[in-house]
Image 1 (cartoon, one colour):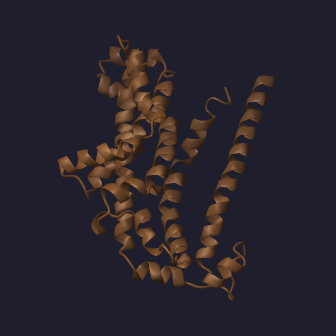
Image 2 (cartoon, helix red, strand yellow):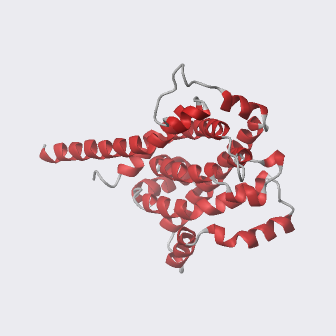
Image 3 (cartoon, helix red, strand yellow):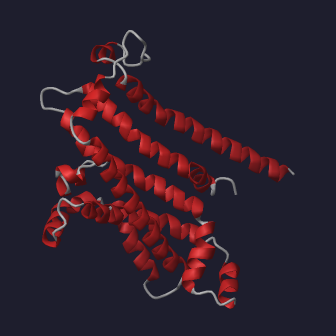
Length: 279
């Protein structure tokens, strides 16, 4: 009984801490959204004031809709993000399953090699990546961005998922083999459902840097037809003059898809983060 109460108390404390961090993280988002509905003068006069009839203005959203094809930019960002997440989760889970399930010479070295990407930023290889994409004819294509972001997210995915997959019962997997299940069926039917919290955690930590990235879209896909929403918002930022109403409106619109994806994965995310804290 005492252990059950202690476990419940730890769960409540972990959820309270996560709620506090969430509120702190959402405050800048709140400030951006409320200022996107205010006039330029009101933004600088009182940035924390709510949009009221005296300072309410839709000029930022009207500018965003008139200048640039933001619907196309959103479509490109969504395509790149979803495509990259699919590749990261699928191939990362496969690699993590192989490293955690099969023992072979060089297993530890292979795991270390796959984890090196966490310590070495992929941007250090920008020039080599650009040359590779030029030689492959993939410049100004969404495929180039999906490939780069998949390579960027795989090290973290393998590192996290391999730890979770080691905790899956060997008896369960051996029972599946006795029943005649192939390794693919064991992976997709038995293992993946048990590591969904870890998959959601990887998805959230992977999708936000992809959606918000400006560097690789600017280097690999700056064409109008392949612009992402983050790159498209830069049109309102000039060297001498910045249209803050349009910038804040574009950023507010860009937050919506990320927020939806976060809400989709939030329950599993909390389970994945608190899994080791409540044992």
